[in-house]
Image 1 (tube, rainbow, N blue to C red):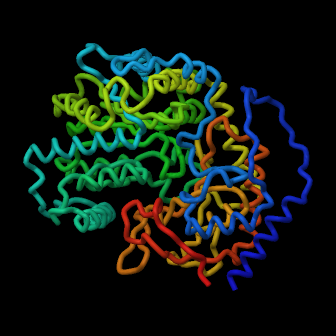
Image 2: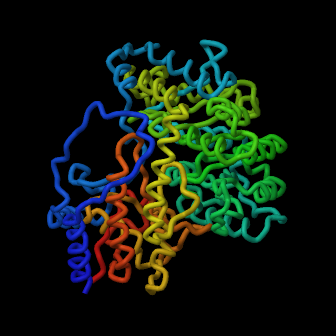
Length: 545
């Protein structure tokens, strides 16, 4: 039966290619022009070939060859940016010295200019910016060294139950996450430490869990209730954060804020919320860190939506945002506008540096062991120059207006077809609500229809990714247990300066076909990887018969 459904959906996709595109109306041109292009070698009409490749990849979008995607590759916005000519010019000027190359000093200076004077390096012998080949490596270093510091304080042996005073929701969420970690942890003991956030992303959660610490998501009430009128659904729940700190503050080594909130639908965080979270952390003597991957996009939303910031420049807003933080980690593959790179930054004389005075030295040792000399951090010198240029470009209002505007137009096109989205539209991606998408079709979590949806989008010629009950959930006794709070989306992340509206609107037509025929979308079975950590990167599936 499902083979017939797939043939039917393929015929629908094929019929799109016979429709003549209508004219689009624009009043403002793009703020850039194409200087170079690459023609695709694959074609939209190669459905049989893509079906064969899909089956070989086990329906896993991460394993499908990118060279065979003729439409929009919306798997991620990380490292997929089309760099500017100014950035390419810096690649040609790169200094590839092993130690203390020219690009290192340019990047360190640009971090101070972009994020504010507080992030400047006061002494050449005390670095504040630690470079890594990507953000994932930076967060790995942060949590690995933090765990060693915490264990060194002698607290890790305390596996007592959580104290009284937590509300039932918090206690349940912590207990579930702790249970998962206990199963994986070598010492089989209940982890003592908790790192709360508005929402950790998947690899951040994995790095925290790998160090036997509980990653706890505390999204705001408006987000949990699906309030589409809320301008800042990415906020952390300050009430839950304060309750947590009151009850188990001694177990919290960091408060972490993701801007924008990727797991939470690319939703922005308000300045008031950043300020409030920083104050709660400081009141309890706990450091406050930012996951700053999409900081410029978050600043744009603050300027456009938060009272009192409409007349402030993007750099001014960024400086204030980062003025509340003790440190931040960043994947420079997002708002660094680069194809590779990450960093961890520590402000001098903060709660964090006073608590862990040797942390910077240990970070440097970690860099040398894993990334090479600290002044290149696993990157070529030319990459450092391109990143510095990207950090200059990304805070430009003309660029950000086009970037966010393109996402809004893409979202509006999908809404015009009654596709259920997370609203308001976020900064880097469109999030399709899979629960509402399949509402009324008798779909169950174990059907993994989000995975089926992404496989069929690849058949149509476009790549998107499931960020829902499979990516963030877990298997328990052979059944899928969704994340708590529940997340069940498919994300279409738009690379920066890569696609035009025509491309995105073509992807929207394929989504429309699937929505109109959603009762024909088959569920999938897991062939491999159900119980693996970070399983969505490695699993293999097949359509149910």
